[in-house]
Image (tube, rainbow, N blue to C red; front, side):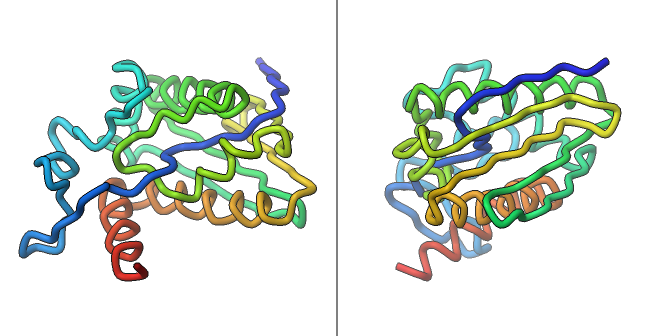
Length: 186
């Protein structure tokens, strides 16, 4: 069965702002000054200013089951083509719901402002009209093609696709690494 969804927006996984106040606590893990940001049981860093409980729960499910997710990315001259799949039907449902939901959010310019979001997503919410997205669920998996004529958006699509792939390969560890790198860059 093939489901086709054509939306002019962007797929975003985790998005736009780094933790407001970050501290390292001996083990190289970042923690928010308010105590949020690192608790892999409750995952408070997946909550957002405009994220629903369901959206945060989907993210937590995907992070807890990152080892059940396989992902391939092809960088195109004008965007990306990704294929994401899981043999676990619950994880696959979460992947599809999250993808379609985030494309809709970007189209509406409704940034969920998840605590651990990558700043890479800022441009997607700012320039959503510059992104064309095609989503298809096939036997291959969840196929997302996103293109843009804006070179800065294309560069951000490439960076974000790599960030999502790192999360699919390493789970929350990848998020911690990205946040540490951003804090060192500033």
